[in-house]
Image 1 (spheres, rainbow, N blue to C red):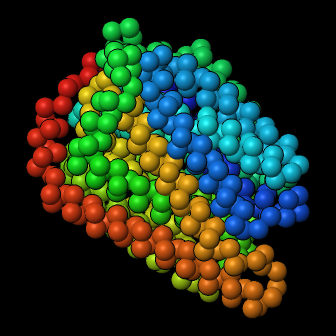
Image 2: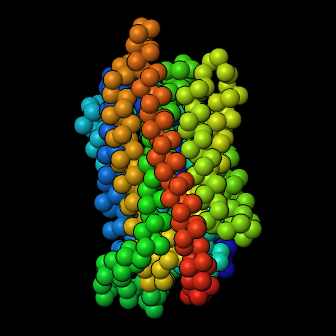
Image 3: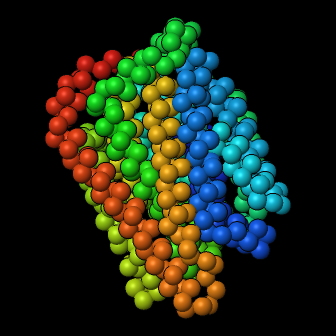
Length: 422
């Protein structure tokens, strides 16, 4: 396995996800600030608009990368991301915010292309470790992105988005000059994309094993997206934090994710296997979501960090394992497509999650100093986190059933998976 292409794709995704991590702690404060004075439910709708577009375009970009190559799809999508961030940074009305998020969502399907790139240059037994690079990039994006966003927000909540636009354009330049193409003329993905775009994917999705993986993945990301949509509002209402303070909390979460997914996931998969990691990760994540509403000024920052570290641990164990399982379920010719479908499922989840969060917190007005309003907001936020915990516990139960029913079948097919030449 060549390390240089993996290093380049890691840097590409890392820079891209700094912009992604930068948005999460800043957007709620940007939208609810004096510039727009929008309601908390609008925050959820903005997150959902991004995910709806990502859901639609992720499989399309994945299949286009099978036909035309990974490199041009990544390049065009990064340019689109930069344009979307520019629109948000210069927005003067809510419709401009939505337009920027929609453009960014259309471009945001490039993660499946990056995953397909990794699948091109890894063997099946190293697939989860390779996919862990994407998780590590997410983790590091949560380390540096929120920190940068929080610091830059001191000069205005629009400044982080302009910085993210500059990062996206710089990333496009880097990719153009240094990232080699993996889809050669004789690559199986070209033949697959040229003959039938959806037939083989449809056949793969009819496999009960893959369908179960996608169901668990869907529930996982729904719960995660509810948490990320609500967490900034929770820290603002419960702790009185601003974008800068919340950004540093995401830094802590990101460090844990980067250590596990970037350094430990390969050893963990070899030692325990993907399925146990999914089960344990789902249980840890569910427990942390139940615990979040019990934190507050009276329990102190340390308790909040402990709960945040737990959901970071659960997510970091499960996400690369689920992606690796999905990738192993199909051959080389369908990697871009099936990983596109996987990310489309994640995008659907990131659409459903913020909409659920928006509905549950719709009764929570801007906090102010009214004790009755505080109680309404606090109740709505508690219900939102516990709804996410219920969804995550359902994912845990499905993961346990999957591990018991499909473990032998999965192990047999994994042994006969077609190896990939690097």
